[in-house]
Image 1 (cartoon, rainbow, N blue to C red):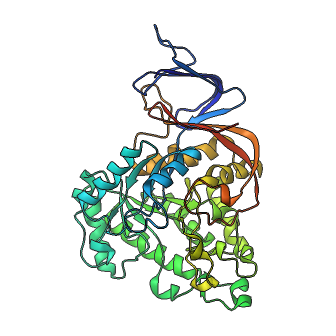
Image 2 (spheres, rainbow, N blue to C red):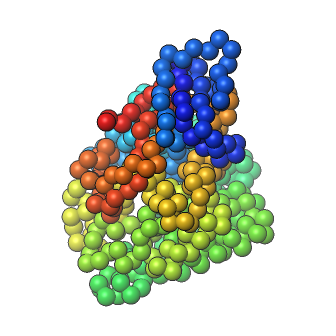
Length: 427
């Protein structure tokens, strides 16, 4: 049906728009007017957005929905429902499903199942190597044609540098973005926390800063050699982002993102073996956290993601080293980003850009904006609403979050997908 979103503060960083006005959506789900309705337009439904912010639907560059293969943790249905409750309209999911997304059929199946539920869109990343084994290259061209927005080897580093070079050359020849998770497998060596004072005190095996910086150095050398467009996912150290900044200054086609939890937590939040803080890459030092925040402020890091990894409750009940890493992050992504605004680190427009237009540009998808003619994927939120995270109330099947009991400001009230109201907060 045709809609009018009235009296909202519309913030669209992609089009330098920030003003209080009305937004008009036709019955085909496209934005047809901003400020003034088209001729003969009649709204069948009006959403009063007084004192609310209207922005593009959020784009999350890293979210595991656990299907296929681990439906006991979560499903496409449960996690796309959680996404829209958090204002997220587009999810990018890595290929480490079971089976792996290394064929066009698997890529298309993921997208079709998401379409069936009519909630958040899912754009898969294709596997860079067959079965993510790091030996034989996948058919990246076919994966690209099947709708994959990039290729990656997910959490499985390609150990053979020649294989990685050939993969980058292949991707570059078809203008495919390579998503890189920078981690040296030998330096990780079974570690589960940052190699620092907290890990030493707790007697837990550490992952040194060099595990990331060594991998970043190798990857940047190959990017320069091959000319591939590359995106570094979930960086965790100040030194690594300094290397990315230097590469960007030299004109290399590289971008980077960071998780919301790495912008707010450090190794000290592990406390006494809090397994909710077991994440990979690990929570680093306060110096690293501050370095990541500064890189976001400077634009070196352009996007914030959730790195959503829902788990069943038993996965976090084991001793720290044996617990499964990851955070159920969809429902805190917006609130944690808005907290950076309250901290004075970035302004509201930059915060929204890091969740909308910037990640959309990275994956090359026409979303994350409110231009006339664009599909009406929209998030409406109350910037002043205060709420406390109770993990039992989370929509996601995974309730694993280190932010339980935190008070947040900023709550989603409505989410629209293609002009259809798919979520409305209860009073």
